[in-house]
Length: 521
Ligand code: HEM
Image (tube, rainbow, N blue to C red; front, side, top):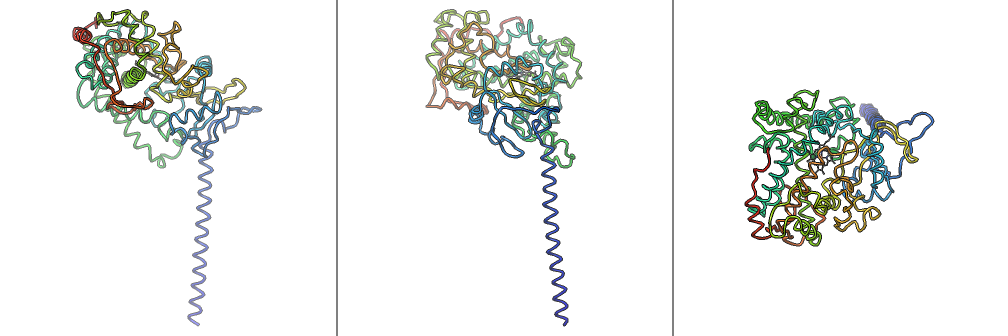
């Protein structure tokens, strides 16, 4: 009897346990579904939100992508993705996390949407991590119109017109230093490219070459943190709405907040002594000097000024280094075009090392400028450049785009479009011999429209002077068989195997005798 009552109690207890397990399971599933539904609602891209009454969003075709992440996995395939995306037509709709990315696959559409419609496509989406936390909302390149516009005006004013001419002396001087580097340590050609790029932008920003020491490493780290999290590389910035979650659930914020503090501290350690020296008046002309003296009429705080100057150094250094690397790649991969470029410089400067080409020769050397443009079409510094975001709903060519749509240039696919460039795989500077060799049309590596690279004229001058002088004085060959589609941008070591040789003794003599103390700087 006792046994029976024990057994029946146990049965009831067991069935209670089973029911409890069921209850917990059902509640868990319900909780999961609720969280899923809430997240789904929170992370709806703008084209899934209602359109103004009586209308419907109408977007170009594109891959359907996965729930939540959209086509994130596709974009991780690099240039292969760019070509697959372009298969949908002149414009392709994709989703990058919760962001709506409309990819522009033709020159015509970049001109139309970045250029003609520039007053409504000059926004930026929110980047809570790389802009908000890492950059403390102070790097203009990622700011929305409000916050960006004044910084842009100041940079434009202090980097164009007479300032541009003033800074040419720095480029001249540093380019001779680069030639001397190539002459004395040819195997370190890629290091000289880096030194040139850092030194020029540093002189422009602060009036002097970068100082040696630990500060420089800290700055390099800050730049690395920024670049490796720039769009579209930061996963959390593909879901900006997640910042609406209670802070306790945003475990990833700490990492980026720490990067922001480190960036601020590194900048301050670097900027403070340079600013003090500039204020004492014993430094040559520079962007920072103009900024500090109030020349640019910038209403920002001291910290804003610091970020503006430091951003310039970051934006101008690595981009130029990579572009000169691409020149070397183009030079040894296309010997016939290289010879044509050399013939042009010889016809102006003499074929026996009589004198170095200079800025005064620019109009006489159209092929050199065309070479510079073609190399940025042929191989690129950037696969993707930051989004241009719609600041209001836009009806365009039968489509209806919601405010918040991000337009993005498909650089790789446009550059390889046979309807835009005959034999796009081949390197042909001739395609840019159109009387506009010194402007930047023909490729979009500097962006386009109101947010176009503010330093593109400086960059174009750097490319001109270095391409002209390197073509004139040095020979380049691949040291071993090499696939020239592999650029290895992200290494600071030799990116591809190159043998550099000075053209002859008269050219070595010319370089040795060239002074790096030119100009009135
Ligand atoms: C080959 C060299 C360079 C390339 C390929 C390049 C490319 C770019 C691109 C694609 C953008 C963004 C454009 C957009 O949003 O549509 C940009 C912005 C910017 N670039 Fe360059 N750049 C180069 C050299 C330079 C130099 C030498 C400087 C410094 C003087 C510079 C300073 C900047 C700045 C400050 C911005 C942000 C502008 C803003 O906030 O409006 N860049 N650049």
